[in-house]
Length: 245
Image (cartoon, rainbow, N blue to C red; front, side, top):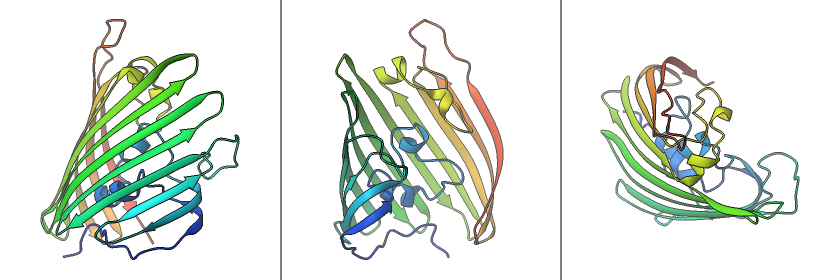
């Protein structure tokens, strides 16, 4: 049976270039279904999945990654601020846990802090993962904005051809209620300035190891917003075709 994802990476040396930062390295490997949907921090526009900088990573039982970036993803640098990331994990058998923290000194007196914890188990039957992340945006002239995400997903491998996917994300905090640009999220816009609950249900039929057909349902249920109104729920029915060569 072909394993859905691999978490075995040989130790690396100090490198300079464009890399996937510690915010996503492990969770993307465990999730393994980016063609279906992005992982929560990427989906909610918290931070970029690519960064230009200096990266030090390695370890097998205790995987680690430290990165100093320019804070402009893979684009040209636009300010003097820098971004630093760090993660440390532990792997034994099918279990994996990891803690991650990052800090960015932005322009105009804005500081951005993110911490994240991941716990997962991978087996022959599939995998299950719990992720929690907390973000604080500190502005000089306003109260701090706080964003939280709690995400749980499970992937069940029925056979070499079939997998079933279920995921639930809860997005909450005063930042979501007062300053969240949900309409800017590509392909699946969220309501502006509202806490939400996001559900994914999907099946994956592997026509070929490199060709996947994924019927899926995505549903967004919103909490009541400050004005007292409740945004209408969003329902998306999709048929996703993924191939690689």
